[in-house]
Each structure stands twice: as C-alpha cells, then as structure tokens.
Length: 543
Image (tube, rainbow, N blue to C red; front, side, top):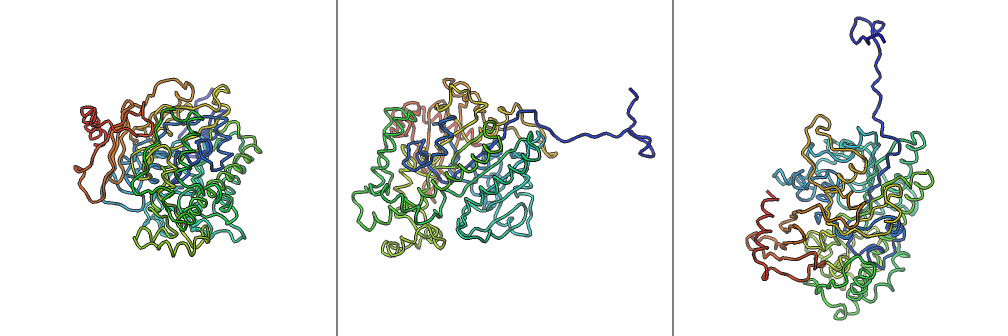
C-alpha cells in the first residue's frame, strides 16, 4: 500500500484523512439519573412510605434498593459530588452554589480539574442532556450576560432545559434553555414537572430516531420535594385523610413497614422526637388542620413527580430502550428542616424570621399549592420523612445524609437479584466511578486539556453483582455548615454544630452503625478512645 502523503502544496498531492467521531461500543447502555430534592429516606413507597410512588416502586421491584447510601446533606454539594465523583469541598462546592465565599473549598462552582460526567462521556460517544434543577453556578453568573462557562452546556451537556437556582415556582417558573432564558409555555394547566418530562422524552426520542445505537446520558433533576410544594387542590385533597393521624403515627407505621421490607434491622430503635417537635396529640385543632395540609401538599407533589417518571419509562419502552437503560432514582439530601417548627406558607419570610402567625396561616392554608405561596412543611413531617433516622437536611446525622437510592437495569442486573436489597455503605461521590465501571471505561487523565484530579469515589459495581460482599468504601467524611461526621469501618462520629459558636464547643457522638441503624445509642462515653480516633481521622480526611 502506498504511503499516505500528509504534506504538500496542493490537496491533489495529499491523502485525505477522516478521523471520525467518537463511537460507543455496540450495546452500550443509556443512563437516566433522576434526582429528587429534599426527599427523606422514608418518602418513597418502596422505602416504607404511604406516599404513592408506583413507578419508582416498579423500578425497585425490577432492580435494587440501597439502604446505606449517603449524600452530603445539601443540594449543590451533593450534585457536585454526584456528577464529578469527588468530595464536594475538593471541587469548590463546600456549600450552596449561590455565592463565592472567598475560599477555594467554597467557591460555589465546580473546578475544571473535576470534569463532570457529561464531559467524561462525550469522548466515549454519548449525547448528554440536563433537565431540571442545576444549582451549580453562582447566581451572579446566571444572567443573560453570562459568563457562561459554568452553565450546563459548557460542562459537557449537549442540551439543557430547566432552572438554574435552587428552588422554583412550579406554576410560573423562570426557565433557561441551553444558554439563554426563555418564557414558560403559555398553556392552561402548565406545571414545570410535566414540562421537564416532555423535553426529556422529546430529546431522547429524537436522538434515537436518527442514531439508535448512540447512547445518551440524561440527568433529570426535579424540583420535588423542595419547597414550594405546588400541586392542584384535587391532588392535595386525596392525601388529607392519610395524614390526619399525625406525624407520630406515620413515623411508627413507616418504621414497621421498613422492618417488614428488610430495609432496616428488626432491632432498629426509633429515636425520640427531634428537639422542637411536639407530640401530635399535644397540638391544637387549628395546628393539626394546618399541618395536615402542609404534608398533603408535599406528598401530592411526590406522587405527581412519580407519575412523570412513569412517562419517561413509557417513552423508553416505546422506543425500545428501557431494557438497556441504567435507571437511578435518588435524593440529594434528607427531608428539610427549613419549614421550621410550624411550617411556612412563605419560605422567604421564614428565612427572614418574620413568618406568619398560626391565625394568619389558618386563614389562607386552603390556598396551599397555589402559585402565590412558597410553602414548606413543619419539622415534624420532615422528621417522619427521615424515618428511622434523626435530624434533617443540612445535618450530618442520618436524617441529613442517609437517602434512598434505586437502581434498575434489566440487561445488567441478574434476574435472580431483581427486587433485592444492598446494605453496603456508599456515598454520592461513588456514582460516577460506578457508571464508568459499568460502561467498561476508566477516568481519563486529561479532559478538555485540563489535567484531572483523581476521583475520590468507590465504585458500587461490586455490590450490584455480589449482595453479600463486604463494603469496599472504608472511610467517608462529612461537613456541612459546621456539622461534621465521619464513617469508618462501621463506626460513625458525628456532631451537630450550633450557629455562631466555636467548633471546639461541639459535642461529638459515637455510633456503631452495624448495630445501630438509626443512631439511637450514643457510645461516646463507653468508647472514648474510638471517638478520639475518629475525630483525629476526620481532621486528616478533611484537610
């Protein structure tokens, strides 16, 4: 064969070369990563809830449920760790993306040496779509003048449709498509969740109609169950009788179902009510009336979102892609404490500490779910959402960091294992390396010309194949707004930090997670040496 000539004066003298485009191996699965917001360990039906989630339950019945999956306890940090496979402080997302706090671990933006999954998957032949909540770009960067380098389409996603901030009005959202802001569709009965799913279905259907062998990665991040809990009055009314029994009874029923499902050990103890949460029976009739409606709105929003997931499933079935799609459904943190002891109809007023009185709320509570209100439920319902764990979103106790995680992949999960549980300890930073291993790929040293920091996560693929294999992830540290924790070889040291106090004033607790799922028995006094060892390890890991 004649040697190809690459240089010359004219094209006639040269041999053309066509490098082609990245192509995934035949049979490469699609990936759908669905993230709920502020949804507790016990808020899906398949995790013990009375809230109806038949489509998520279907995925669980045909796949796997993880009982020991952890997040960072806050939205932006979890999403940063999830999409990069690194610890959130290491990539600049120590807290919310809204602000740059002036320190490298708290820049409010993900560093370029921590490539996101779509940036990694693009050279492997994937198209990638981000739909829904982003919250990974500082607020002063999301205007029409940019800069745009931290927007989804500059972090590897081919298309984006959703909202850039942390929360959004579901009836009248401020929307972004690709790299510009757009008006919401002008149609009766519009709801953001339905709009997001329409875009998801349209985009993957269009791609597969033209290139059926090309895989896609869809990151679908719903507003549910973050406030505001916006759904129709009819949907809310369906749940009013369900929650009239109150949060104490709901909590008792959820832990009983969790034990019956095998999600938690039979000897798991339900901790006492969190501080500031009254017994339901001690409430006035007006308080009960108001609080039931707060929870009914939340539950209705979860069910509405589950129905939307059902439409995504139907789309994939229609185009013949469901069997070879890795489905993951998870939450970014535990149920939210940001409604306060009494709930709120206006989240902004709550944060400003000028919330409504009970009488004022009682007068307008039947308007809950409407566009003019930014409602969130009381602490008691968040406590029930995190059953059997204690505390909430933001905290590094189980209620903040232990979350539901469902995986479904018919072509990759053996039929004998479908519907089973996995109890190995894992963290949201483990998802990216897991997906790469399932694809038979490894993390490149360089992405877009930038040398990459190693992934910190541990692949969960071993647990998918072998339910009884011991946990490979030995250590994971946590820190959020001063709350700290560390898990090492089944032991957990954790502290709940009080605002505007010194870290040295924090009181550390010690739990044996192998025998105390709900962190109900503090062993700090019995094992002071173990506690000191873990505190020292926390400082080493967090450094």
